[in-house]
Length: 241
Image (cartoon, rainbow, N blue to C red; front, side, top):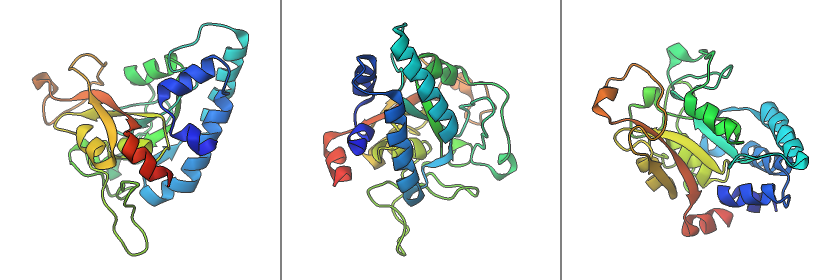
């Protein structure tokens, strides 16, 4: 059952939690157990918010029991990219050694909106330095592998692509139901294709964007926030074996 939960679509998890077929605590524990068992193989998460996620799951369960209004992602575990996707009080490295200990004092708008919708953030996902590469690797955390060809046993594995490689890999390996990413020249779409998941680059302006220095110039309307979602049927079958 725990593995089935980890590969269920986010919409299904939300619906089952809402009708009390599933507990948010049960769902979050299933994902955290899988992260503990498998993240070391692929290097997708760089920060795991285990205790905070458990506390939020308990709050989500109480909200379900109270019969109050629930958000569309109530109790659904998600991940966010370790780039410009700030979560207050959580280390945000940009994949860069000089910023390895940076801790923001504010939330990015779309991170706050995820939590307002009821999502439970499990952690931050790996990215190349400042997101400016189509492979996910950096000098702090090393590379992120696709879960279908991980590193180990003398093999370098196959890279998950970039720059949202950590986000695509966590969805592909059942370590988050949905993961947030960002894309200018393919940074969601490339990892999605490498990892066999669905990647969505939203229309510019559809998702609130973090203000930041940008060598590509945000005024040119290239970079947008988006997400990696559940696997294709074929990839899900491969991973379950």
